[in-house]
Image 1 (cartoon, rainbow, N blue to C red):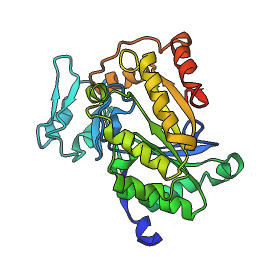
Image 2 (image 1 turned 90 degrees about the vertical axis):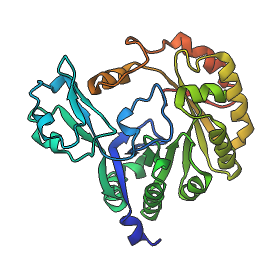
Image 3 (image 1 turned 30 degrees about the vertical axis):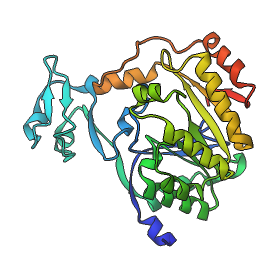
Length: 309
């Protein structure tokens, strides 16, 4: 596929975030693609799980006027007793009639269909900052590999325009797709959530065998990696899990540039409540520093550790 064809590849973008300093070296423009193979209980971007554009209720703005119900052709919209809108994703056709009729911005669309060329034109606007800081473009999600053709086109175009690239992935994707994208990737930000596969399936919907095997393959290909470990209460926050993770990281060799510990914080909970989605964690503070320090003490033997990305 030539660059013209790459520019015309279509995908669904959740957001384009500029001037990020947590998604790789230097100043980054992070492109969040929609869709994910996993279903993590603590996901901070629930609006990014499905691959297609979709409507979410913005509950604080809803007045209960019911105009959206009148125009919904599939009956996907209902109001609960407290007038909170509920959308049946199985019935919603994303026709957006409800969004158009709502006067109060109580129904919002997440996901925009764009060409790879349109995305790269936006990313390239920040190129002067990449040059001075050593930054570039990072693909994130959701899971960017849930849109493999689009991810490949974006990475190829970024490299053609002289930009550094990073891939933020959980690694739960077919190797034949991942391998193609890695050809145009300078750094992989690789999530390892929990080493026990049974627990991994319980918390994310899938086991971790493919994830660990893909990590080994990336390392064998000599591609630089940073390992990212979310620290989630009552899920993976044990010394045993961190010890097992550290040993696995050691087995990957010198390609690992460091470890990013990402302690749980409750901010995502407000997003779930606004969208009317269930959230299994209590409101309150994030993990205090003293709860994270034992994990730093374990992992520092295997690589440099950064807290917070």
